[in-house]
Image 1 (cartoon, one colour):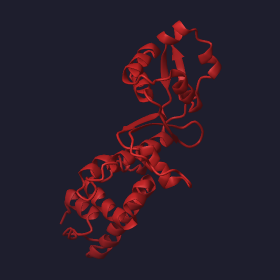
Image 2: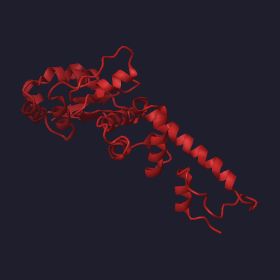
Image 3: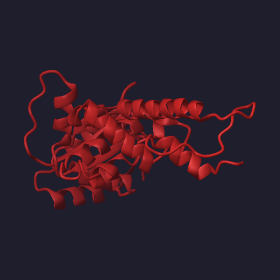
Image 4: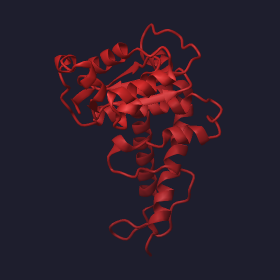
Length: 249
């Protein structure tokens, strides 16, 4: 008797599901107990992968609640790749829809930030341009220039104080979050990715650069979004985070 693969996968990811019929070991004997052990090992491994990928979410909801959350998540979103670094890509949308968490509005955006940090860690390396190369451009050339940004760069925008929440849960002595929207730049200036708070208008500027806009057009978009936009502040941040890897016409 052949076991249907869809039934097998669903049972493997659901501890409450019945064992699939027809399971046999290499000698043709019933393998129900072996399946139970295998199912438990798979669930434990996938839960541990989510715990590693979303440590702040785990801390915010509590260890036991996170295990329940993870169990529901892996049933709805089983791994699509053998590479565990990709597992959890749907966590933000899951938290927004999952009944026990859907009213905690900041959780999906915190998950997006944690996912951005993980993606930044696994992104390709790229050498940044030197600050001198940027400083050498005349103002009119800079306005016309387009910039290639580092593969590790991620932009996370939120109406919640997601970076403050993240810091409060991972950094000793961090200030308690104040209710305010925060836009976060994630990049990997050295070995590890690091999130930084973008100043007013900074997200619009970076977002425009990511779509291929010139410096001038990006500045216009940032200035339209915020009267307080200061280009030197944002440029200094981009240079410090080693995100500018190519600049030209």
